Image (cartoon, rainbow, N blue to C red):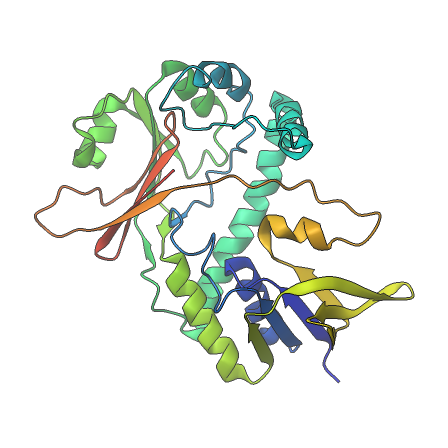
Length: 310
C-alpha cells in the first residue's frame, strides 16, 4: 500500500513536492486555502532561476547599509515600527546571521540545494516533457552601483568556474539595455534560467490531476496537525480529519502557525512588489536577466513580457 502524504500549501514548493512524491509512488493530498494553487508568492515573483547566485540576504555588508536605508525614501528594505515583538525578534536574528563565516557556510549549503533544484527541473523537462511555462536559459547579470558591494561579490563567488567578473564596459556590451545606468561592474552567470512561476504551478497541478494519485483540495484551510502517539495521524480541515502517514508544511510564513508544540519555525514575511509589462521588438528591454544589487530590483524577460520585482 502506498504511503499517504498530506501537503499544506499549493504554491510552487507544495506543488513541486507533490509532483516529486507522486513520481516516487506516494499518494498525495494537497490542501490549499485559496481557490487554486500558485496565487500568492508564486503568482508574479521575479521569475529568475538563480542557481548559482546564492548569497544569503543576511550579507555581512547589510547592517552598515541598513543604517543608510533608514534615512532614504527609496530604501530597498523598510521596517515599519509596531508593538508586535515578532518582527523585532526576526530583525535581531537576521542581524546575528550577518557574519562573514556564517554567510559563507550558508552560501555553500544553498549552492548544493540550488544545483539539485536545477538538475531536478532538467529531469522533469526532459523525462516528462514538462513545458508551457516560458522556460529558457538566458543567463543572469548581477550589476553593482557601489564599488564596495562589487568588491565583496568578486571575493565571494559561489561557483568561480561558472561565474565571470565583468567591467562596466563589458556589462554594457553583454546587455545594451543598461546604457543609462551607472553600474561599476557585474557578475555574469551564463547558465542561469528564467521561467513563469505561476504557469509552472498550473502545469504541475494539471499533471498531478491526471496522475490519479493526487487529491487537490482548494478553498480549504488546515486548522491543525493531528498527532497520534509519537507520529502524526493527519490534518484537520473544517472539523474533518484527513489521514496521512506524513505531513509536509509548504504554507510559507503561515507554516509557523501549524507547528506542533515544542517546535518553532523562525519565519517572518517580507512584502515584495512586481510589475509585468508587455514587450516587443521595438522595446529596449533586457534579454539577459538583470539584478540591480544595490537597489534590490530584478528584471526578467519571461516570454513576451518583462517582469520587474523588488
